[in-house]
Length: 299
Image (cartoon, rainbow, N blue to C red; front, side):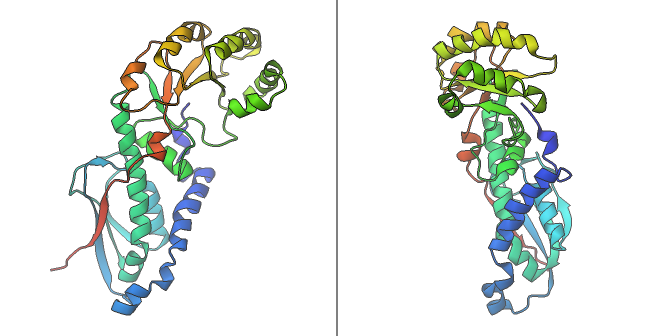
């Protein structure tokens, strides 16, 4: 359920995501038409130093992407904290030098990037600390910034789940509703398991779990040793989880809980046999961490 090693700029898909979200956001801000700077400062060609500071405690994320952005603009990085660093309020996380017009033009894109990713990492860390030991915390694809959000989750101590639609087979409720025959659909999917990292089936009731297990007993005979199969128990309360967890574990299935699990109720899901808990709130409801950029005085 984890592919954080692929969330690096050396990976072509991740680089494409950074170009889309980070460079795309920079271009959409129209920095070359910055009338505020031109009207007040003119060409603003002077070389300056700027510092980014944390205005609250949290986990730093987005430095890899920020350094890529600043390098693309020809700005010199004088100091930089590492991704995953525990920041304290008032701490300087980045110091950059270059032409004033360029720094002012990239300021908001840079802060948006760092604040967003650090906010996701911080929320993930906070929830991870409340998790039962040995249970993974998974991101979902309910994200604003796609793979960048996934990387932020990993920096906060979580795991990625699938990265995109081609990364793993995830049979969800709409797939099942559209299938003429659940059993035939599963057989078709299992034939393609060698092409993906894992195969997972979303189950929405105790009855569905029982039906799936009956089919899985036959299908599992064709699996290879490294074929990973998981089930997602969608919106199961603790009582229903306890009803189905033993036969799922006995079948050697990876068991994921999804839906309705949050910081307030996660302690209720401290149930033996659960492999992971996924939460869309890690990325869909994360607050930005508060950062600010200040011009360093040369006096």
